Length: 365
Image 1 (cartoon, rainbow, N blue to C red):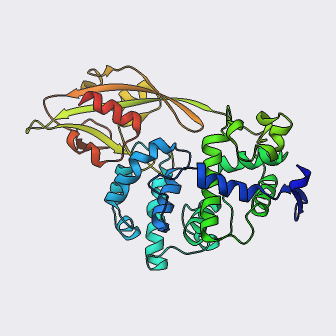
Image 2: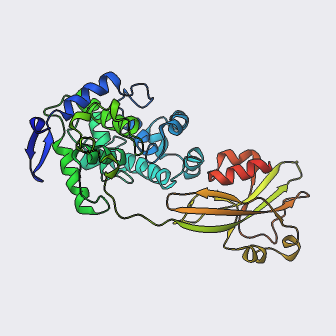
Image 3: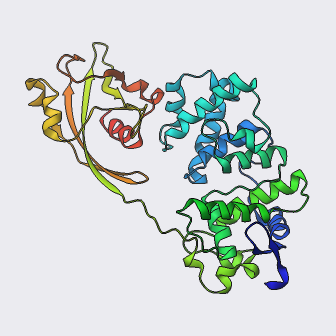
């Protein structure tokens, strides 16, 4: 590897000089090219795909991306939308703060930039919900800016490539890896080079240099990868701090009613912000069953039917949901119920619902 290395400031690391050209060549011949957000320089479409792909698999985003564009074809349409409409279309995609920030960002672009996204990463990063790596992706893909992305997949690729010993749970090593990522960029790239290089980093991390069972035999830079050369792939990236998972039990009050017109409806509340599922619609939530029962009139409490508990995993939390059904077949009276509102079953699709809630209500419809 020494024949392919240069000394780079400010961190003084030896870097493989052929990394960028090899990655560009590999992406053009073997990388992904048929994804619906590729082959465009429209910042709105690139931004939307980047936000959707954060901590979400491509296979999942493929079904949401076209529906979102059909409803909100440009940034002005998204900025003018009602928050409930945005959350409803995002429902099931998870990490709902992304949807709230997406809406805020669109409004900022229209309000402060006349509906045109800034064309540099530095300016893009000032917008709500756009971090450094997302800003770099938009600037590189749409304007050919010579700047590197550094999302989770790319951190893994570069950590293994360089056998980077810094602890990425700490800010200092994160900044050092950013500097190395910038030093690895292609020299004097064309716009097409920056597109291929940026997409190549994404493709390499997503399809070859995977977190577990990396496909080193298919890697275009295997020969210059220090972790592979020392048989230490599993050591990198180094990240010592792990966020402890919390386990919580929630009791959900599922109230089902039927109006005079025969239309079935459910009693839902909007979840408060901040917190889990903020801004989404959900059955009233309680810390335990006695608290749930205490929220009801005695007549309603006696009619509760326990349903099968449901487990749901979040990023750093495991929820155990305990639904109790109150069936008001003869009407939709609300006296004696906790705060909320009736939502017709046919209108649930127009409301942002957490995935396990949507599944519960669908089974009861």
